[in-house]
Length: 364
Ligand SMILES: [Zn+2]
Figure 1 (cartoon, rainbow, N blue to C red):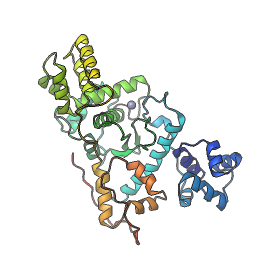
Figure 2: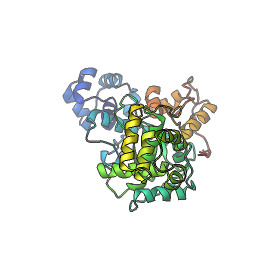
Figure 3: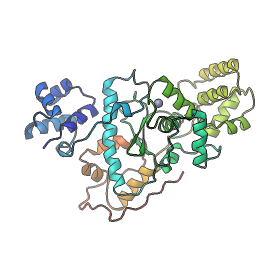
Figure 4: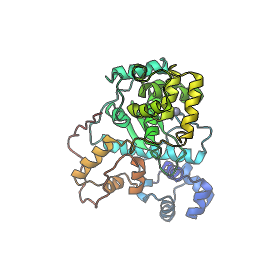
């Protein structure tokens, strides 16, 4: 039995239209369409051609059927501007990464979600509530990825080849997920995590996930969460110099532009002063990049631990990939930029899941 849904997901993962796959695999368009709707099954030979063209092992297509993450469930930024190809590729990649998450869940006891859903609150207030519930006070957050992982959020990567797709997030059976594009600056990465946390908190189940107002709310949440009013007001003088803004961005590990925006939002700088700061920052290159930025993007502590514990038991990344019936490259794309010490390693001879699940703790 071949799973029709897996043919469609593999094709979308590669960013291919039916016509493009038909040409690449040398299979007629009509036949392809029949396979994807489940009307007919490909023969063994045809399945081999499809598997080769899609760069998935044949065994992948014989696994249980799988539902593509619904577009409505996902907080895509600028979704109207995003082409269907990269968008579906990101959705397909994330759908498959959920199988890695299940693999991890079946072996380790992970932190339960402590992400509240506060749909009725103003983003600024919601950010304060989350900080209070997580005992963060108004201190700067040293590592956003570690923090959300310690509160039960699962963080994965978006495929690096589709760099126009921004981060997105969703709830799935009570577990919050964040998928990150790991190609942007470290400051932008931290803001993305805080922005997606905002979606999870504010737009959890009931509220509309997308559109300009949801984006604005998630940005306000991120800004308030990373740079709490009380701490900013106590540190930054009124009408600060640009040099003071540049020095202070290191305290909250944010982009200089993001701090300037926050200062304006809090009334610490006037409209006129804000425009002046923006012009000066632009001249210094802060609009297109982040000079004097923090070194290196934040990594996942959870995935790092999972793969190093697996390695300790002789289970390599390649072994995990083969248990999930994907290539090592495919699996690597789900954790790209989030894990440093992945060893692809040699084949393992015996594969037995742990008898009792070890608890995996993540500290912020
Ligand atoms: Zn968003």
